[in-house]
Amino acid sequence: MDNGRALRRSAGLAIGLVLLGALAIGPGCRREVPSGGPAAGAAEAAPPAVDPAIDERFAFISGRSAGSGPYSAWEGETAWKDFAKAADKAWTDFDGAVLAPMRTWAASDLARPRERTRSLFYPFGGPDFTSAATLFPDAPVIVLIGLEPVGNLPEFDRLTPEGRADFFADMGTLALEFLVRGYFVTMDMMDTYSERHVDGALPVIGFFLKREGFSVAGVRRLLPAADGSWAEAPYERLKERPRRPYGVRIDYFKAGDATLRTLFYFSCDIEDRAFREGSPLHRFFNGLERPTTFVKAGSYLLHWDNFSTLRRLILDRSLYVLQDDTAVPYRFFKREGWAITLFGRYATPVKDFTNVEQPDLRAAYEDPESDVRPLPFHFGYRWRTQVDNLMLAGKPLRPYKVPVNK
Image 1 (spheres, rainbow, N blue to C red):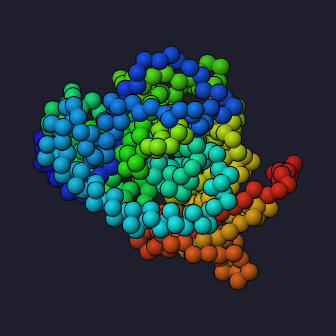
Image 2 (cartoon, rainbow, N blue to C red; image 1 turned 120 degrees about the vertical axis):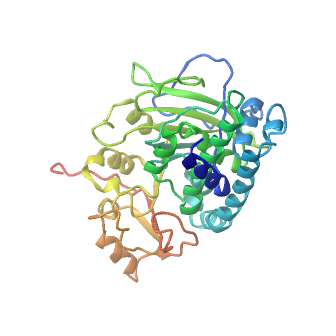
Image 3 (tube, rainbow, N blue to C red; image 1 turned 30 degrees about the vertical axis):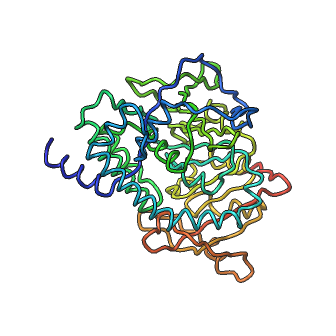
C-alpha cells in the first residue's frame, strides 16, 4: 500500500461512515415492472419477511453488528471497529443537527403533503435515501436518481483484511462528504468509486437504510426491456456496468410494520438529449402515481433549457414540489398558479454557479405579504453560512395550458 492510500485510509477511518453493502437475492424469475408505474409499496396481508443473509450484510456495512456467521470474526478487525465508532458519532451528530429538527418541522409544515404522497420523486438525489425518508417517512415508493453507477455489493468473504480495510476507508470518505454538508458532490463520489473499493451507489444506499432502522426484504436489478418497459432480475454481481439508464429496486420495511416499501435508484442522464418523451425512463416517471417531487442541491440544472423535458414532467405530474432554489425556477410556479409557501431565507447563489440568481424569488421572500416561515435545519450549498431556503408548491386546481407559441 502506498503512502497516499495509507493516509486516505487513516483519514477515512477517523471520520468515516456510510456504507452498506451486500445482497444476493435468492433465485427468482425475471419479471416486468409495469410501465404505468411500479406495483410497489402495497400493504401485505402478512408481515414481510427479511432476507437474513442480505440484512446481516447491510448491518455489517453500516457499522452495526450483524452478530453471526463470518461477520462476528470480521467485526474484530481494527478497520471495521474504527469505522463503526466513527459512523456512530457522525450519525449521532448529523441526526441532532439536521434530521431531528427536520422530522419535527416536516410533521407540522408538511403534514398535508405527507398524507397525500404515495410516491416521492427525488431527482439529483443520488444515494441520499435518508433525506427522503425523513421528510416523507410514510411514502410507500421513493425514487432516487443520479449519475452515479448502481455498482455491486462487496463480497467480504473474497476480500483480504487489507481489502476490507480499503472498503471501510472509502466508505468513511463518502460518509464525511454527506454528513458534514448534507449533500453529495458527484465528482468527488466518482473519484472514490473509480477506486472500486466501494463499487457504486448501492452500498451507500444500504448504509442509510440500516442507519434509519429498516430491514431489507430483497434487491433486484432493473434494465430497460425491448418493448420500452423495465425488466427485473435477481441481484447478481455485474462484471461490466450497463449503459445508462439502469437501476435497482430495494424492498424494505420497519420491524412490526406490515407495509412493504420500495426504493428505486436509477443511474441515468436526464439531460434532454438522453431523457426523451416515450423513453423507458420517461415512461417510468410518468407512470408514478402523482408523485411529490423533492430537489435540493440540484446544481441549478433545471434552470436551463437542456433540462426542459424533466422540468416539464415535474410541473405536469407533481402533486407537490418541495425544493430549494437550485431546482425549477420560481417563475414557472407563479406563472402556472401554484400555491406557494416559502421557508428560510433567500441568498445569492454560491460562486460555483452563475446566471442563476432569481430576483423574483428574492422579492417574494422580502414581500411582507408572502407566506414565509422559519426553516429550523440546514443543508445544501450554503451549509457553511446556514442561509437555507425551501419552497413548497401545491398543484393548481386548474391544469395549466402551455401557450402555443412557447
